[in-house]
Length: 304
Image (tube, rainbow, N blue to C red; front, side, top):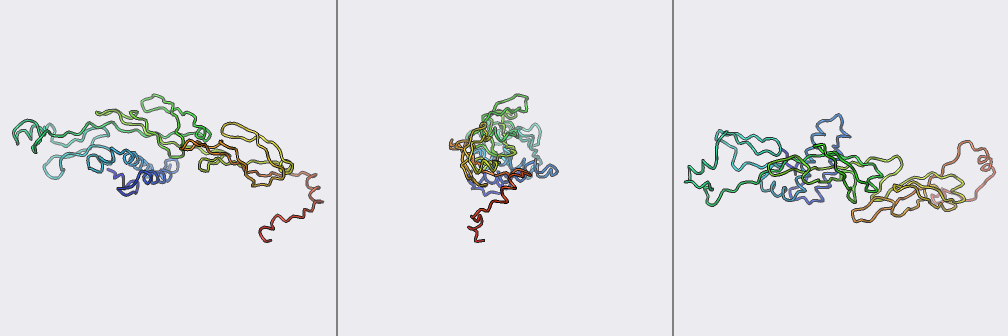
């Protein structure tokens, strides 16, 4: 049985922000894709995901803190487990605990000892815990970089074979979790939930920087010297970009609102860094450079 606080390495009074931060760090470290030959890491990944799920559910967290449920969300027994000759066996997720003494009726025992009524021996009616919901089911959804940036709907197949088209949330990133209420396994108190963890695939030339997207754009020497309008790829499709005359490698230009959608609803930008690419074995260019003696020292600012 896991202690969710210990699993995530946070204090009992940790805030939601601290819990999310701890989970993201552990999820990246223990992710199955990075630990294909380490089953222990996969098991820990499952534990920290369950812990994260429980601690971010305010109702379940309060129940755990009061000792009403265990670290996996199962109800704890109403009696101590020491002595007596009965035994406690935790059943599969979503099932009631089995206290041994098969066939024993605790209501009948109290009635015989304290004089009927089926109530509590301490006065009033005996409180019964609500039936537990079914187990949550964890899913991992791979999303293409451009699809995450543009919030394209993603189709996922659930455990029961049904498919759902998911709308990605603004601010989606690696490790983002989405809860699908009632899409888990059935139980006496209703269905559990489906917990979908997002994995954003890398891209061959785009990189993410917060809500911005960065891109290194190759340009020719002629385009850099004379200036030009060139076609540039973006996650929304290609656009035309004006390159100022006399541009150097490393110069960064901005394409507004071509980045990721932030949590606030404001979209980031695409930052295009120019990279001059010289042609191979260009005899005319080589001949020109031989007779060209620029007066400026490009390293003057470095004191050399």
